[in-house]
Structure formats: C-alpha cells, structure tokens
Length: 461
Image (tube, rainbow, N blue to C red; front, side, top):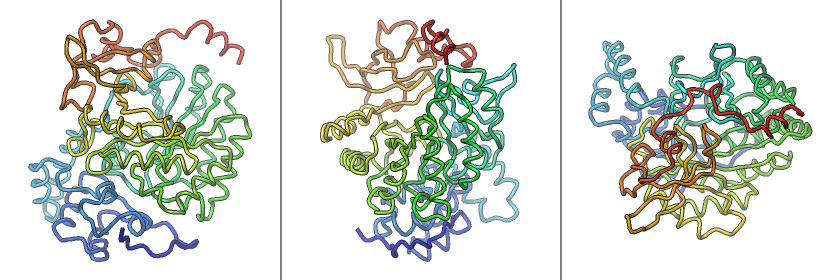
C-alpha cells in the first residue's frame, strides 16, 4: 500500500492541522479540488483536526476518497444532507455572510442530536440539588469524568459521538477545570468503584496536568479502577514513546497501579492499519509494561470498517499486541449518523463472521453493542420461531442494575439501525419494555436500591 510516509524520527513533534490548512494539505498530497472544497465546507459544522502522523503514516493517498483512514478524519460530502451542504457552500466563502453562516451552523448542529441517549437530561449527577459539571453518572458503579484540559484530541474522528465537545459551544460541552467536585461526589457515593476519565482525549494533556486530575482520585478508597479513554495510541503513539514526557506518563501509570488500583487504558482502534506501525505496537507494549490493562473498542461504521475481514484483522492485531478486544459498538445516533450507520442485521452478520475466525483468547470481544438510553444492549443473535424472526438481545449494562444480564427479543428488521427503531416482541418483561420505551429514573440519585449485601460491603470499605 503506497503511503507517503517519511521515517518516523524520535524528534518528530506534534502539530495539529485544522480547517485553515485544508488547501496546504490538498496541495501536498494531491487532493482533488472538489474534495478539498467539500472538506472546507463541511468543517464549518463538523469538527476537523488531523496531525502529521495521521497524514504521513496512516492515510493511503492513492485511494482517496475511499481510503478508510481518510474517511475517518476528513469530513466528506454526504455527511450532511444535500440541502445543508449546498446552503453552507453558499456562505463559507462570503465575507459578508458571517452572521448568516453562524446561524446556519447552529441550526444544522442542533439537528444532529449533539447529546444522544439523554446525556444532558439523565446522566448529569447532583450534589445537594446542584448539578455537578464535567461528570456523567449513568451506571451505578461508574462515573465519567471530563477534565477541561482534555477536551480535544490529536485528531478528530468524523464519526465521533462526542463531536459536540469540539465545536466551541459551552452549552454543548462537558468539562471541569479541576477534580474537587468529582472527589466530593465520590465521597458521597461509595457505590462508585470505577472512574472513566474521558473527553475528548485525556492523553492530549501534559503528564503534569494529567497527574493533577488523576492523583486526587487515589485518595478515595472506594475507587478501585481508573480507566482512561484514548485514541492517542492510534493517532499519536509518540505520546507513550518519544514525546518529551512519555517516560513521565508511564511513571504516573506505575504509581496508580502501585496504589493497588486497576488502571485500564481503553484504546480506540477502528481499523487494523492503525496497529500496523511499529510505533503503535511499541506504545501498547510500553503501556502494558507499567502494569496497566489494555482494552480495545471501536464502533462499526460504514465506509471505514463495515466488513468482517477488517474486524478479524483488527482483533487479531490487538491480541498480538497484548491488548484485550473488548467492544464492537454500534454507531450512535448523532452527528453524520445517516452516513455512518450500519443496520443491526448487517452489524450482527459482520460480528458473527469475524468472531468465528478468532482464536479463543480474542473471543473476549462483545458486539454489536448499542450504548443506548436504558443501557448497553447487545445483539446476541437472530432466532426463528413459529411466530417469526427475532433479534435476541441482552442488557449488558443498565441504568437499572436489576436489568443487567437480562435477555429479551425484538422483531427482526433488515433496516433498523438503533434500539428505538425496533419493535419489542410480545411478552417482553414489563420492566425491560418500560426501560426501552423510556421509563427509568431521571438520575442515579433516584436509582433502585443497592442490594443489602453490597451495602454491607461498602460500609466495611
């Protein structure tokens, strides 16, 4: 595969490219004018950011626009409706239309479901009746934490379900500058034993800044696992190998592990090419050498990885690197969803076809999984009965812990791509039906009671 990639040097420094660099990138890599024009037009709405490693070592410039990495990082014609794209094209280059452009961008973004699955309405926790900014608490045992300085990435994925974090609108953004409110909340909720530090990408921060967010968590005895969600191993593996503070971040990881906690680095690999470079594999190895756990997850997205071979090769590459294949997610119903969505029937077939090629140690992966409003719902299979054809579904995780692990069925559909497009089977248990249809506590503060045995364990802790 012809990639225009110079040798990776230890001195390579991170440089981000944005919308104003599109013409420079197009000239350098031979991007046709009409494609460059679409990138500039759509990047008025969809966040666009790329870096030198992605440009020089991941994109196959002889296969654009079809190259999966190119599709992953460059906004494409078709990601917005034809009417919206045409509307933008008439405004982006008109200096006298700045006000109209700003209004159009706001309207288009507002129609892209910027916060799916009730994130703003249902996931934001409270202390004494006041919302705690920069946190989400959807599942009893897990809190998501959004450090304000980590709300960007080394490159942006065009399919990212957190795209609203990157568009400069404070009303759409989850972020907090420091962890004091998190620590206060954790102290009041001993049932939370797992903190997922997310973004954006926490690994965009310097080690000193990252340390200021992570070390205070070590003073909370009930937190036993700290997870870091990151795409950096794919998009900028230098963060763990050659960056000026690469060794420092590994020492920080060692300190967390030495405290007796699990540190899990949740690596986002979407395509097997991201693990082909020696630098990426070295990054995984160095992370694992600290005692940290390495897990891998990604969504199934059209135009990028919607074929069994891509997933089989990806999961095998992850296993070979010493990481655990964890989740194949279903693309969430946000952003350019219609461009990237894959029907559940096709998603299940892709998963099944790839899964059966794997060695046993790679069959840790679960999918296809919808991270939907009531919880994580996996498509376990398709069954035929005298009453018809059905998806066999299961709640892997749920707002209501009493639903976790529970199976249920929905009528088979060739076109449905999300949970709310399915029709539940007759006889679905009432509590599952209620959750799927939107009847659940309005916050974790109103969640069902913790089992008595767990209350006793928490009291002892």
